[in-house]
Length: 151
Image (tube, rainbow, N blue to C red):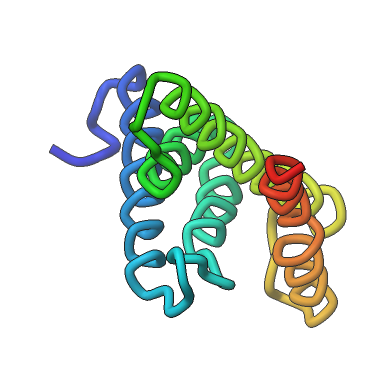
């Protein structure tokens, strides 16, 4: 049985589940390799994976990024001392997951708008646009969420 021989109704949920698992796994790997206190890392590999997944599979798989990001972040922020702390931890992880997902969606949109869906790396100008839009402009959205949480 191959992936394409699955019923069409199962392809989307399987793709979303695979993206969530891979995002979570790369997030845990990124935290494990972090060399700073509190497992803060300047490079977050799952964001690159999320952008690649959306570029290849389309916008429909964004729930996989959201779910994977939530579970990757909940374990980092979870404080289970009381019910209020757990609620705040869930809200925090949800906000971070929303920011990460928005970042991937915005980067994907900008790349499709200014480069197109084909020939992403064919010309140096397109590579430059990929670096700027996918690596600098889109991730600004996910930076705002932790900053707002500290206010």
